[in-house]
Length: 255
Image (cartoon, rainbow, N blue to C red; front, side, top):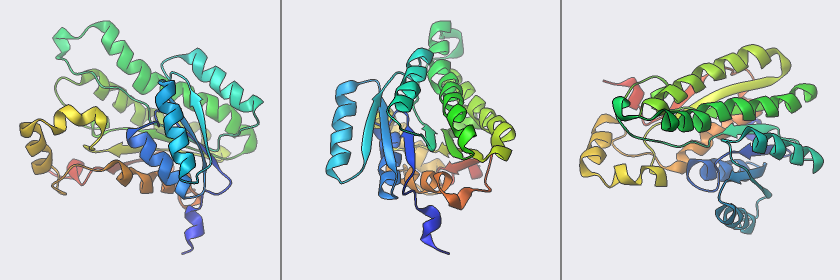
């Protein structure tokens, strides 16, 4: 089989929440596969630094600073890309936040904030991308789910509800757009060694639980998301639609 199936040359990929962490790792993987990548974040200084770092590696990179929690900013960002003649072929809905608190102590505002970023933003970004992909007759949308798309865990209820919603949103996008040249799939990361998980990694009890519960006996590394993202963004996955692929060291498959 030719590796050209996985070649992203000539494609442009927008990855939300990509100035660091999993988004940055997927962006670097797609850039290495030939894509022009658009990094996104709300911290303009961090975003600019990430763009310059990737450019220094020889990659074709743009920056798009907008808050995925704001519908107006998402719409404006896509309109600016239109005005600049930039067509998004691949969208990765990666931006997310976490908030840990027992349900009975959870304020509605905190619930809504997590839902807005982790679920509603996925809908809005995908809607805006699909409006432009549909007339062209092709596109790839990759939504980032979680182990909590299928499993529950105490104190992270809004996150789990949002990620469960991402799973079903992915299936419904596949149902609506599957005959129009757009494939929509999701990736479910396991426990990854990212900045967002620093407190968990540094907690000896939790660290031991992750390593004991995961068949791989370790945390995942951000760069281990890149291969699956490249596959779902490439022609190699043209008949794959509505799926959630776990990159979790086997955790979801075992008791």
